[in-house]
Amino acid sequence: MKTQGNTVLITGGASGIGYALAEKFLAAGNTVILCGRREEKLREAKAKHPGVHTRVCDVASSEDRVALAVWAGKEFPDLNVLINNAGIQKRVALTGSPAIASLREELAINLEAPIHLATLFIPLFLKRREAAIVNVTSGLSFSPLAMVPVYSATKAALHSFTLSLRHQLARTPVSVVEIIPPAVDTDLGGVGLHTFGAPLREFTDSIWEQLEAGSQEAAYGMAAEASRASREQLDASFQRMNPGA
Ligand SMILES: NC(=O)c1ccc[n+]([C@@H]2O[C@H](COP(=O)([O-])OP(=O)(O)OC[C@H]3O[C@@H](n4cnc5c(N)ncnc54)[C@H](OP(=O)(O)O)[C@@H]3O)[C@@H](O)[C@H]2O)c1
Image (cartoon, rainbow, N blue to C red; front, side, top):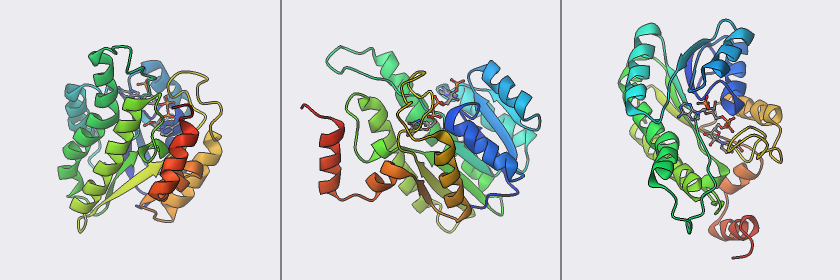
């Protein structure tokens, strides 16, 4: 994908990886639209970057997704990049009778939303000279962390969907890009739970370089290794990440 001259919509763009990517796109002169649930985070982003556009949107809601697509298509006729970044991560004890509503929320945000948003934006993007759909998956797409079982499953499914999407959009103007982060120091799952992860700036600098170089898969650190690992290496990694079974 090209990294300049785009109009880019980033879901979950007011914090963490989405916000760090937004700053890269802004610095490169792109028009950037951020959406998320927390209005105050969107306001903070706008205060720092007055040129940024924002919209409150809960991507768990299919009505909100449709409204977002209608609004963005109308307000930004040049919109040509969708970054499916919004995500949540829950620790779930499968033996503890978890509530289905909570499991559904994780499925809806991490998997249903990127699939639905892709289908909503494809008709628009097919009319562009160049467009891109960027899905943020995870190293856990390749080797799950058992304490976040639904999260890991959504990311494996999103990786799979990304391959199919790319195949179906081959020979169209729409590129399909996958960003594959390892653990990164953001608020994912709750404040302080990812401080062991890679520094956000180092991660984003590397991802940006890969996007600029035209990579279809931009991965970093352990996630880059996992995305290219053999079955034997993935089994060993599963044992390392999930000791004691
Ligand atoms: N950090 C890591 O270790 C890591 C590793 C691999 C993959 N990832 C992926 O990277 C992406 C970004 O996560 P992050 O690490 O930057 O975490 P984060 O700091 O918690 O950011 C997540 C963003 O998603 C937004 N969001 C969550 N639910 C939403 C909803 N229903 N509707 C709209 N926006 C929603 C949040 O904003 P609101 O709460 O205001 O809605 C927030 O801005 C996620 O897809 C995550 O799975 C992260």
